[in-house]
Length: 335
Image 1 (cartoon, rainbow, N blue to C red):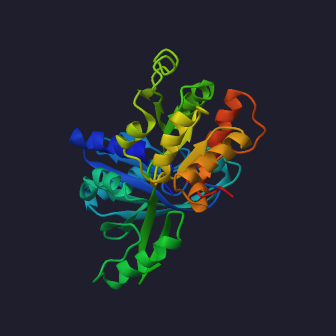
Image 2: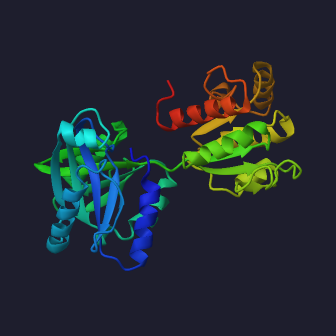
């Protein structure tokens, strides 16, 4: 999975708007110790200005040299590196390893960012790139009628994959890169826990929104720099793009506020739903939601009491437990 794809794609879009000639370098395979995970990007322009990284600095110069050749040839190159222990030590690693980096001219993918963001509204998306020709296509694991054998073979494997990887088919190499909708954390309740939770989420590059119709609580002074909505919870959520990257957390303990938000959340495809409260509070909430027509299976989606059980007591510790659980679910590591 690509953990930090959005910042680099935004920078790509900016540089494209400035008319720069660009190449994209992507870590496509690693063995042993690796400074950067598979899917990590670096962009380079024709003046050798760079953004992002494919290592801790130990192979960047070689990648930039390859970029210049890619500019001349107009074709991608698949590079293989052995990172020696000495090089790894300089990059802050304990031992060396091997890695492959795909370097490709970016012209053909200039509309990729808006296409990708559109696809992600429907769920996890894969970008499949032919490492020899540079041809690419998007997939969400559904093989179209009339697809050729290579495309069908690639797409048949996608539903069972969690991580990006190289795949060889008929003697050609394809890079299957998984993209997830970036997390959007929607918090209901301008309480003390929210004051700790929202800044902590921002440190993880998680977009945040605070909902609370109580204007005395949800203020710029108490939540500086936070996107605040004073609409009623279900109305506020209805105006948002709640999708596979959305986490909804209720913190108020007030049924008048929490229940409308949970009702909306349970009918959405938000990947995470959490509700703060004691076991007694959660049991009462559970009964109310059953009474309005939700099933036991529906209510299994609610993490309540919210957060991992780390014995948290303070607002900061509770915020940490919530974010840890949100990330665990997002990364498929809930168990």
